[in-house]
Image (cartoon, rainbow over all chains, first blue to last red):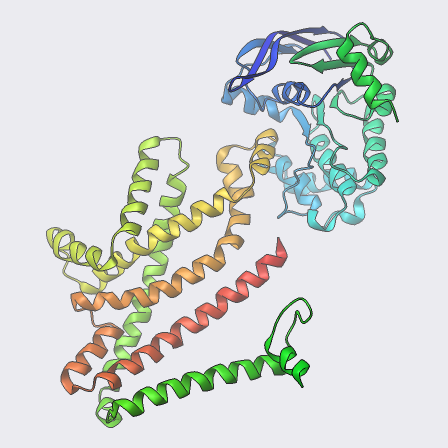
Length: 243
Length: 264
């Protein structure tokens, strides 16, 4: 996966969240974005998901440039899998329907085939027994795994995950990370915002440290973890790796 | 003894649920109190009841009752359509539609139904040459009730969290698909209870149509009263008749509220 960003700027009112961000990366398999809260990680991911429009700047992913017009973005979003921190499953649909609805309505897959594919996915991720349950009857870990299945089911070009384990009880974190790791091993291209540093180190082949509206460090996980020139990066890692 | 009385009449943290028997005792007690109050009132009034004169007019009451039910049902259907269009118009991209819908809702909700009926009947219907009072009555009640239903629908749609809309967007749903597959299925169950409540109001509010001489239930009672001068005998059946209609609707509302409060 190729990612080229230049001059990317995003403001919310007077608050500049991303300030003229430049980035160039090639052959990315899994990119993990870390950094302090409020530093702009999620905003960057949301721009890459086509959910947020920047005030300025250009974004190229693989061989296409993002055009920030609704008509283009809607088509673009169909090719991108997005996983949210709070799972965001549709509460009135069963696990299975959560997966099949976008397949049938957005991607035009025949209902029977969509069902078959969704059931196969659920089977693979050990979720088959929950296919006919509504989200309210599922644990956080199960909900997030179903949300990931929904994002994967559309066979996306790449998968974006916004702090997928932050809303989970600690006991459920592992099952979700296992699933992401499995996808990673199957060569699914990933971009992931996370606070799980251990997982980041293991799963990332590239890492970005975002804070104060810009990229403070980038490279392989080792390079970023050892990047102690910038005092902000050093302090952040000292804090999160303390215990 | 004191404890048993408390358990029968007081709901609090120590006694969160009443037994069925205790509930019945409470209901009987209240009914007895009300009966006593009315008994006292009527005995002081010394009013001679002539129920037999009223009985002769039972056909008139009954046909008025029927007309009230008919007007309410037709108005319910039409006001649902109006409310749906108006409620959805408030999130249309084309701004004049939003404004129009807002003006309609605020205008209707902010003015007395009595004035609306008079203006609509004597000005608008007259100018359009519509003389069928039954139809005019239904249209007026629908326009009136539609404004409230519009608000019920709008608040229902707005109750669907931003995160769900965003998820739908991220999955590539169009606006129309989001409404059809995500918003509506959830909104319908949420707005059924307030809609049922609105229907109960509609039934009662239709009594105002009597001022333009539509022979619905209230008009029937007014006519009987004018013919017999038996005021209370004319109006008490009216109250009972409306209760017969609104109590089931109110029970339905409660049932729907319970059903959907667990479901979500």
